[in-house]
Image (tube, rainbow, N blue to C red; front, side):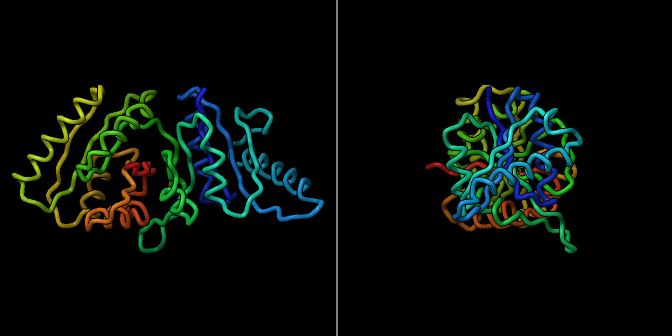
Length: 270
């Protein structure tokens, strides 16, 4: 059985991610593990603190899922540690994990949505897919997925990974590139990229879209709203070109209107 890990700090901004995790469990036939990391410090009462924190975690699940903990089909785990992100990564690394889910903050008055600090750090460092779920987002079976690409060859690897994640849903994937380049050059890149994908991936619900625009964020925002996208997916790139800086800053860390829906981030491996 695969596992879905939901990491929480008990904040209201993480509740939607809990409900999303719980909604996925039957679709994946997966075990849901609710995870919390806290620093119990040293002392003879450390064990008692961990037991108390576990009870608090169980109560948190019961409160927001509306059932007694004993009736919920999930398990909880509490880790003692001062550095949250490395502790979560170490916990997840040796498990057969499909996804790690975390919360994102609610919109501010300027209609921007910021990822929680721990979620931002996790996206930057996690070697596995991270799904950041916005505040108050309600779970629905994903039907339309947007994968934002820079025609990076490694995107193909992660699009393949995405098709495996989406297998229970049979969702439609739109591979979108926002270009400032001339149409002829961009079209040639798309042909090359499409051929590469068709050679490596057997999935019959992949569409391709190019938007010619100088404003990447606004173009993505408009497309997500118009097409009713359920999840935005992207590669967290290591190299910092002008384009990837924009993607990193505005899609991962700010994600203005796009973060009305969950953001699925893959870590660059090569």
